[in-house]
Figure 1 (cartoon, rainbow, N blue to C red):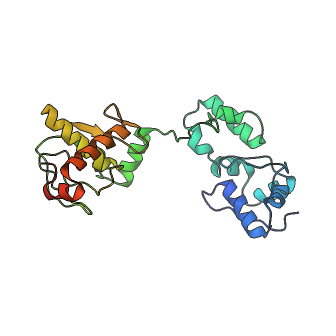
Figure 2 (cartoon, helix red, strand yellow; figure 1 turned 90 degrees about the vertical axis):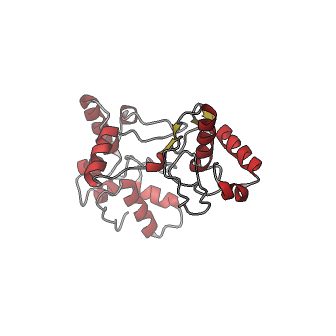
Figure 3 (spheres, one colour; figure 1 turned 30 degrees about the horizontal axis):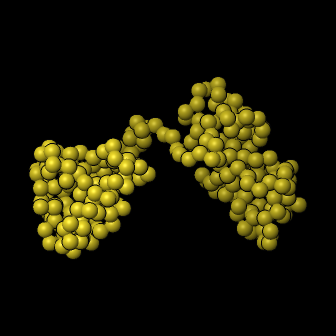
Length: 242
């Protein structure tokens, strides 16, 4: 029998509230919490994002401060998924969540456990929200690299501040770690610009495996070979990309 239960915080996931209950219960083993809360004593991996089947005692405590409809719709990941669902499918999904049963996992287009998980969002909506919250802000200005000569070439960065000269960005390299894109991709873009005689524009994001059609490991190798030919980063720092 549950003797106490923490009140849920605004915007807190239901699972987080249940985790706080376990933390404050003093139980030495997880199975005791499972027996209190879940309608399945063999449950090992409860659903973190949405809901599970709960014991009548747990449901009474969960709905003590807010009705179950509010809990399901505002204290789960439901709002993050419904934006991409047709209206009728959205209704079926929320009904499944409210009943803690049905095929709502399929209706919500949830990825399989053995697949890479990601968040789907509307870029235009995100852009509007960002512009309202941060008017005039330029997001990730270092995301693009442009080869050419009409750039600020001041060596103003921390760590290794190499003069970029006839270079690819408005400043120096950001350190000596060739695994970082702002080091290896800068060098690669500069080398390509010198070879083609044309400006080179490249961009990449965290998790990208290719840049300019090449595996990122190849980009790193090209940059590493260039630095080695220069005699290492210390020697390279004397002249930069000249």
